[in-house]
Each structure stands twice: as structure tokens, then as C-alpha cells.
Length: 152
Image 1 (cartoon, rainbow, N blue to C red):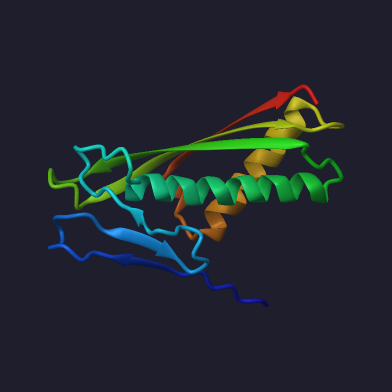
Image 2 (cartoon, one colour):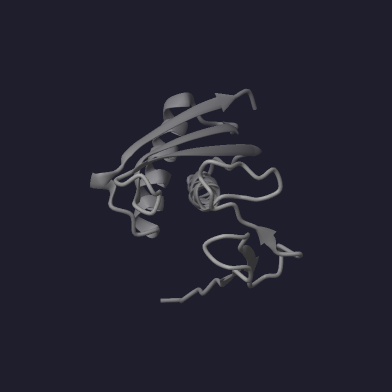
């Protein structure tokens, strides 16, 4: 088995939990480091929230697994767009007890030689694998997957 490691560093240099933490990744793709917005009630136009980053990580994994599965079945996509919406709820009012309750995934793709039902099967299987690969507890999360086959 091949083991992959990916790194991210959060630097919070100005009086945590106030101020603005910054994210950098091992590949240095986020240079300068990305500011994070951890205040749920304030939207910072130049900062990403942890929830957005989590949605992005899930979405990137889902898109990659969908593309891989399409290719392995001999029907590679010409184009693929995936979007993910996470729904979280909080136990207490302070935002420190957020729980993910739902993941809604949507994929649209241009794929020759496949029909809408085939794309839906591939996308659903990819999301199941995504949940497994990321170690999420599917029984605790309402997961929906929608697909749209666009004209190839």
C-alpha cells in the first residue's frame, strides 16, 4: 500500500481566537498564505472559512473520484464540474460545537457514450467512495448526489 501525506499549516499570530489565522499548504500553492475567517457571523471578502475549505476538500475528492471512475469505465469526461454544499448545525450557541448534518453534491459533465442514469450511478458510487476515503460516518450525514449530463 502506498501512503500519501499532505500538509497544511495554520498560523494564528494575533491573539487567538481573535484576529485572522492564515493557511499555507505543503505544495506552497497558496502563496501568500490564505487568510481564514473563523467568525461565523462576519463574512470576510478575502478570507475562506473552515467550512468552505471542508466543502472544497470534499468536492475536490468527489470530482476526482467521479472523473477516475468515468475513465476506468471507458467513458472519460470531456468536462466535469462538481459543487458541494455542507449543512452544519450547532449544539451550543458559541459555534464551537458544529456538526455536519448534510452534504449535497452536484456534478455536471460532458461525457460521450454514457446516459443520464449511467452518470448518476457513477456519481453516487464516487460519493460513497469519497465518504469512505475521508473517514466520514455516512449513517450520521444526509448525503444527496445529483448529476446532469450535458450535451457532449
